[in-house]
Amino acid sequence: MFTIQLSPYHDGLTGALFQISAAGVQRDAVISNDVYTDYSWEGVWESAVWMDGQGWSAEIRIPFSQLRFPASENHLWGINASRFIHRKNESVWLHPVKKTDSGTASRMDNLDGINGIEARRHLELLPYVAGRTEFIEPMSPDDPFNDGSRQFASTGIDIKYGLSSNFTLDATINPDFGQVEVDPAVVNLTAFETYFRKSGRSFSKGQYLRQFRAHRLQ
Image 1 (cartoon, rainbow, N blue to C red):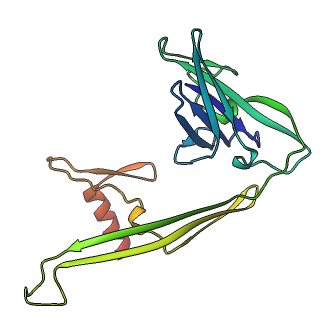
Image 2 (image 1 turned 135 degrees about the vertical axis):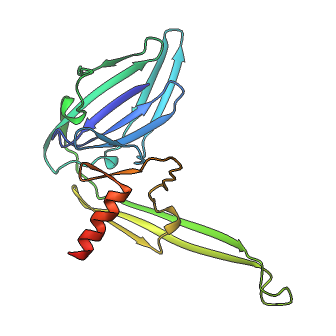
């Protein structure tokens, strides 16, 4: 696997990474707060892989429209690249990163010579169509208006518009709440209490309820 990391702001906090495997599989992510990577981002870029007797090589094309960078005549970006060699279980870096280092954006080298480019405003439209069918036994089998099945359909669109290089407007029309993330349910069948994390401290279910009642009494 080959990975290239870019930080157009070169602020030691933000950036983006693009990965390509020897089989041509792509993966990308957004880097934030130096150490966090969000792989839910889906950038639009191109890549190709070749194999020969000496190994494999890759070519990557990343449009400037997929990156956010400030308006400037001369740019100084951050860059780093790594190759993971599976048979040796080792990673080779362009700018060395120690195993004890936890940073990502702050461990990049300097990339200059990118001049005469302008940031474009980003516009992403993601429409969706959803259908649903319910089968509920009617109260009366003789009801001609209710045969026990109901069909529902809905449409909507998600909009992402970049107002500037560091400000984005997210909007949605008729959102699909079926895709909203929810906290997983916790089923505890043991004799021990379930502990929840809150503000860096651990609370058991009983302690949390007691504190909640005390807060309501206050």
